[in-house]
Amino acid sequence: MRLNKKIFALGAAGLLALTGCDNEEIIAKPTDYDNVLINGVDEEVVNNIESVVIDKLQTSSASEVLDEVLFLLAEAKFGAWTDVKADAEKADFVSEVNERVATKILAKANLPAHKTRNKFSEYDFAMALVKQFYKVNGSYDLETISASLWHEDVVITPAITWENVWDELLNEDFYQEYIELELIPEIYRELLTEEYLVENDYRSLYLARARKVNYVSITINDDYPADAKYLLYEFIDQNILANDSNKPADLEILANAWRGDQNVWTNNEETLLQDAGLIGDNSTDDPATSYVEYSYDHTGFGNVLSDYAKIKDNVLTTDTAIEQEFTSSGSYPKEVGLEIKTNEVKIVDYTVDGWYVQYDGLKTLPDSIRTRLFSSKVEKAVDYVIDDLGDAENGGYTEAGEDKDKTRSTYIRNINGKYYLMPETYDENDDRNFIHYDSGAKTYYIVEVEEAVNRVKFEADDAETNYVGLGKDLGEIVADVAKVVGNRSDKRSEATEYFIEQADLKFHDQAVYDFFVKQFPDLFGEDAK
Image: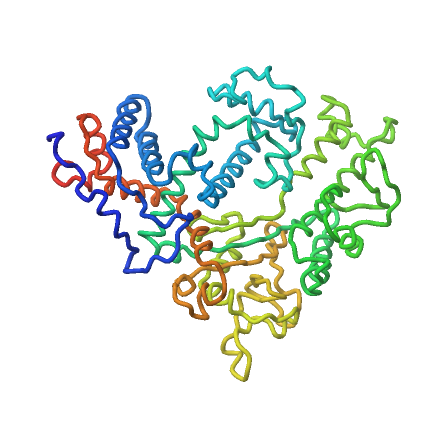
């Protein structure tokens, strides 16, 4: 084995004619870049790669070494983050990266290690990073930061998202070192893998059975078993079927109502609860808590308050079991227990939304619902089923006229422009017939399907059956699907091998050469044997 042998033969020229599988036309990219994936790899990048491999070979796993190599190749394509984020012409790319940074750091902050009794401490979060040798606000000494700047005792509810994490939870400026050393390399590798999929494995994107969904799940309260159904009925009647712009078909409204946390109510939650019989008349308005108390309240919040009210100062009349529960058998005052339990209600997220693929997506859904959701019949109905305007008798048709029964979908209804997944059996005359019920879990579901991908919709020509003809942003949808598919370990491996092959690397160190031979035996022919 000779080190002066040219290890990879394709080189930069091989990067100039990238095509998709099966002669698919490349019609979209997951970033705003239109240039080739890697515009050549110069000697400096090669030297950096050799240096990384040499430095990490003895202390890191092979996957960690390859991650570093892929990041260097990504930098060769996208540019160094410090330069990119200052470039106004790359604003779209920067926006995408910043969204991913905020999403990832929120997920890390929401780990149990940074919370006590469901209350988040930014100071503890920062200290955990310092212990991992990341500077916070430019220093390892957190005492240099004013105590008033920390976000403390924050309950991370579903209302805190990537969009407001820097206002509600964390100080963005404090974590630049962690972002640049840890998150940016991870995101760059993701973006490079996604571009590989779009440019070289486009077929895998539309075969992934990708779905953009938004669903809500409401589990029966055994104390009031009919309440969940009654609330669902009211929400469907008022917010979905009525097509009232003042009462949107937003599943978060239903979730907020069921939770009962008045501080996050945004619309007609109170009306829904009253009409469904879950709350009584307003009885008091407590200025100390900003909560309205009702004559009765069967929401999650109301159930906690109802139990708390059973704790009495008189030992003869108090509910001993509940008092033990609220005080953890005397470990802390009942008021602390009340705060703990109300916080537990606040953090429950009854909705799930985003892009998912059949391979590993939405495993928390009951199999009966998940199987229907990823059926090809859903793809053929979403975007095509005619709006029935809330009339179930007209639901599911993809065309009007005498032959319309031949094209009726039993999987999807279009109600006022939103597509809802139908259960396996339903009453064709019931306007609320898109409710799913899992008897084993005693849980109701409403599943909205915003997008359902297939090959036809991904075609680039302007036909009425594809995303272009439907007036949708094909590039954005392709990027969203690539983001999910790119999380698969096999796709990351394929992308890594592809870019290593294309980079035309020439090494000057035997250990480095041996490492790449071992990791990519298919690229080396007889040398790998």
